[in-house]
Amino acid sequence: MRLDFTTLPPRDAYSWMVTTILPRPIAWVSTISAGGKTNLAPFSFFQGVCANPPTLMFVPVNTRDGAKKDTTRNIEAVPEFVVNLVPFALGEQMNASAAMLPHGESEFEKFGIASKPSERVRPPRVAAAPVAFECTLDRIVLIGEGPLAANVMFGRILVAHVSDDVMGPDGRPDPAKLDLIGRLGGDAYVRTRDIFEMERP
Ligand SMILES: Cc1cc2nc3c(=O)[nH]c(=O)nc-3n(C[C@H](O)[C@H](O)[C@H](O)COP(=O)(O)O)c2cc1C
Picture (cartoon, rainbow, N blue to C red):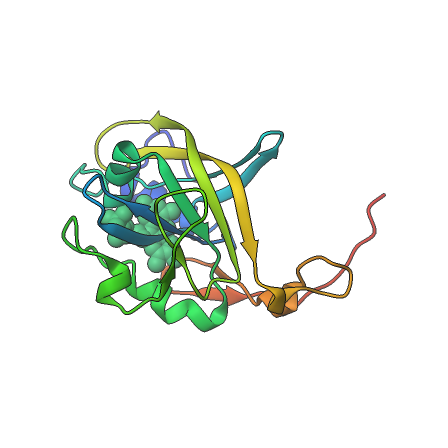
């Protein structure tokens, strides 16, 4: 099979990308509006970018109507966010928080997700997340325009909170204790349970 992405409609291109680029880590992103309303939503177009300066990125795309998601609107108003990581135990809450609530309605409140104040940014973090990165916005890069176009959010990591419960004997997080989930296509997810090692040449 061969797919010509230069002629694929954006919705088909999206569908092929999310069923082939696997597994994707999940950024569970908390933001705050200018009026102080919190927001929480998952994004699996997410990666670390570089360590000098410490930078990560995630991508809220526009809706199918071409509107900006609440996360984008909030970051444009208050250029700070927290990227919380998602263990298996928080999967249901993460999934619930993907609901499209009216702007200004908080997923923390609506779904009873406990939050904790952040140290260096205004949006709170998810209290039970094993890892949370407090970030300031570095820049927004727009790719395309209209429905499904991207607002690539680059964040400068200021401080990370790592739960003592996930630490291994070598002083680094133990992937088995982190028990993070990743996204596959559609409604499918993966757990980081089947781990193998390869020595680098
Ligand atoms: C696991 C998962 C990953 C998602 N990844 C993305 C993504 O990378 N980009 C995106 O725009 N939406 C993604 N979504 C959908 C958003 O979470 C959803 O549109 C959400 O309502 C946006 O919230 P907001 O309007 O409060 O910003 C994902 C949903 C789930 C469940």
